[in-house]
Length: 465
Ligand SMILES: *[C@@H]1O[C@H](CO)[C@@H](O)[C@H](O)[C@H]1NC(C)=O
Ligand SMILES: *[C@@H]1O[C@H](CO)[C@@H](O)[C@H](O)[C@H]1NC(C)=O
Image (cartoon, rainbow, N blue to C red; front, top):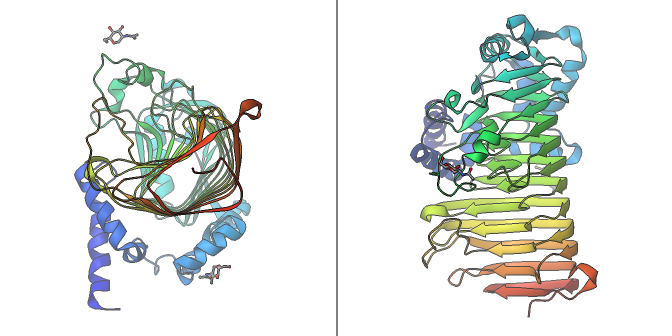
């Protein structure tokens, strides 16, 4: 424990308070680099004042990061969150708040101010706090639920529905967020209710839909930014303006029992987006939208998804990575148990030319494909822009990728497409027990470019030729 260990956390505390989730992209890049180089330090710097909250926090701090991960995969909840759920069972021990007591009406008039006041009180309350959103339909403009909070545990129970304002002017200049939870620790968002982004107006005005319009930003429906120890479960999220749920710079996240829906034609409406987030487990969710089912991008590590049903949409993606010559790192990703139906891709890794960094230690296993256009795809020549992308020398290194027990049907001839970089070939790719044919049992093909150390185990069809 040298001096540096103390200096860095201090610096990062400063960073994490002043680099808000609303900062511009240059600051975002800076924090990405810091995140990557000093993961452990930041993890510690992220902490709260343990003197102030002795009992529950000590449970957390006694567990080093690695223990948390093991226990997360064991029984789905980080230990701290399990004890918080127990705390909620004792009704009398918690402070119960209701948005209606702060003036929310749920009658189609604007409830933003009432939710803001309710949040302030909840966040300032000590101990366990439950903020209830009853079974009505609440209308909200963009709103930020900011921490750090004094509460040990904050549970937002959404029983009713929360609907977004569809007046574009309400979103101000920034436009990137509708509901934002920022710097909150030990947070549960649950309750069986619905979050509706009311996104039609945004889709119509998207340059991807109407080519005569300029490309502008659109809001993500729910963003969790800089949150630690977070459970999001039992919710329906629908018709987001752009992405539905985004985890950004979060640690220790459990997301489960989510139903995410938007029309197949809605642009950029990713289901769950994971960026700069570590130790996240997503499970038991059904996602059908106009874009990626789950997208996992730079700075993400120890990401697990189990029992996910996707379709329609673009499938499960790692990337895109390396846009604009950026450095990107994603590692330790496991997608175990997924069913994809009628999607444009199945399991995809996509990187732009000119990027650097790596996508490594990735496992796709126990996956069923039903009429998927590109069931298994690595695309290192990804180019999502009007102009063709020019050839560049560098690339994000793709390595240690396992595809295991993947079966079903492809909607295109090429069921396996590993299109790796000429200068940075993919390394150590394992195909094990693969069986993907066309409908009616017709033969499919595999295209494998620039793959080094490809191993096939068990029965693999189609073969790389
Ligand atoms: C996590 O689990 C693995 C496999 O069970 C074990 O080898 C490893 O030591 C565990 N790590 C910790 C930190 O307990
Ligand atoms: C596209 O946008 C232009 C400019 O606002 C508008 O005039 C046109 O009707 C739009 N087209 C469609 C198909 O909505």
